[in-house]
Length: 198
Image 1: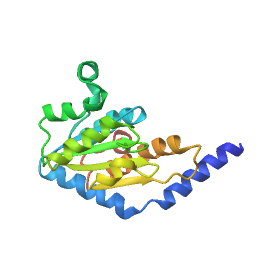
Image 2 (image 1 turned 45 degrees about the vertical axis):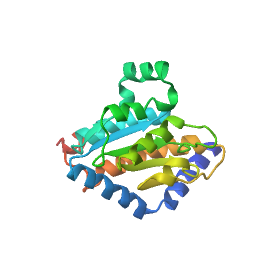
Image 3 (image 1 turned 90 degrees about the vertical axis):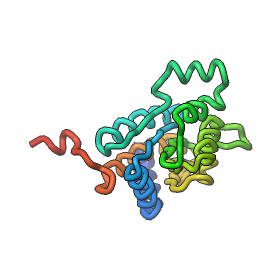
């Protein structure tokens, strides 16, 4: 019981530290992307890849975004990893999709990527590819946000309240925040099933 109470208390404390203005900034970026008929590319590694796939469904179905998760094409992903390497597995996909200035890259990552530490370099290279074509970059990350927070146009950083629980808190709250985003009246176009069922 002690751990459960501690975990839930920490979640509340973390949420209390999030700046609503940064969340609104992300809403504004995403709204503009949709208004200019840009595409939304959602990426991550590990748990972030799972989030990217789920969030792609939500942004397409509920928000009417032309949302794409490059990681859902496992054949292309594994072919690129096998033939060209992990580091460029996403950036090459984005180049083939002709990522452009109307588009947006949405990152889910605990550390946000780091060139110096050679961590999540596939995400770092994807961000570089986005910046080269002046696409928008947004993210929901943890720890200090890493490369994503440094380069993003809008980024929610989940503060590392407990050094032993950085990953579960970050990945758990990523789902909370992307559901907040797609539920926002500026982004949500279509009803969710249970809320629309009488």
